[in-house]
Image (cartoon, rainbow, N blue to C red; front, side, top):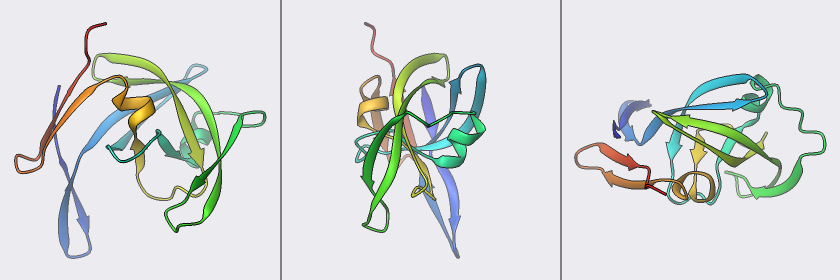
Length: 133
């Protein structure tokens, strides 16, 4: 699957980012969002409002501490959700945190573990392939 980088306005300039439309599902509720394909992120990390829109009850969820964008430790919750990208579906852990105010991230453990990703910044595209198992 080939995806174009998305252009995002940042002040007076335009940035091109590897964003993909991904659907998260849990208990019959789904939400589609644009997530940054981030090879430097260890985990899938999403905003707390995504968990709320999915109707997730985080009481009893696995509590973790993440390093927030501001360099401070932040509370977070790890839960399993279902993902869909194009024709591909998989289940993976997601960390939800109120410290995430910017982009949702697709990281190593919950995304790159399932796909081979090739970035082409000059061509402003990325190729995402699901290896055959």
